[in-house]
Image (tube, rainbow, N blue to C red; front, side, top):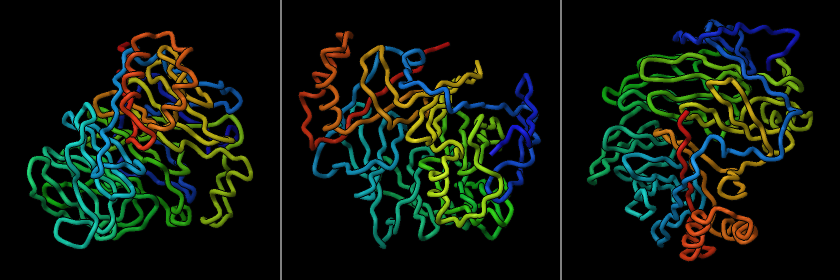
Length: 395
């Protein structure tokens, strides 16, 4: 981590992105060479944390409440990932190992993909992304992507060589996101890939060989796309990168005012997670979602600490729980942002019913109360989760 006494960071008044093709990292993943004059520092004081992080000031009061339809063929056990694309909702379910497709109103349409060894099947469902009228699903164990057409039963396969955990794409250009894994190209954390030609375009974000010792630890999500750009973070790395079709460059560096993780760690990779928590070190962000004007996510410090960073004001707010008080005091923790600059969170039907019954009488927004009552009338404890979709306020 970055330390007050040993590190200095150049912060420019005006951000002028410079594409960086190779960044050298130390064994713990911390950036050692800062070449971009537009890099901004995000400073976090762990002692300044509110009980709640209220998002009312950045979200519109109106909300779409979308119960995901419940049928035998689309029962959701655990959501790995949720995305919006072409006016549809795509849900990767861990148990069924399928991608379930719903309309924007939550009506179930169909599933895509199947676990197996037959044609058009994957042995293990990894990440997924989109290309034109297709959803592209990773078969992580067999080193290929299966491209399923959304409007027919056709598919094709794309092979790749670089092992990776996640993918973010801009139509035919994809970035394969590794996590300190060696490859035939060398020690790189990112690979630019062309879905049309099935060719690796370049290798990005180099790391020293020792970084492999820390590669066991992962994140809930590595990337988050909004519009033509995406953000990217890595475990034990205090840098937030920006990705787009043209390339990658570092945008922000994160620093805590105290309890930073030491640069040199003589601990086995299998004990790293326990070591950090036993010694109450802070090691960067665990989850990051990006919108046009904000970065939202959380880090761990005796429990979840949620944050929202205003890109324009260079200001960060932190809380132990999230709520949107303009509608109700309904608290939540599982959230995502969309490519179209919207904010969503999701709750199980049983938890939502319990929470709403406890706070319904305190809700002063009659429109929201009517929407909630109508939605909950159609649900049982065994129903699929409910999605809440907000628009960010225009500045």
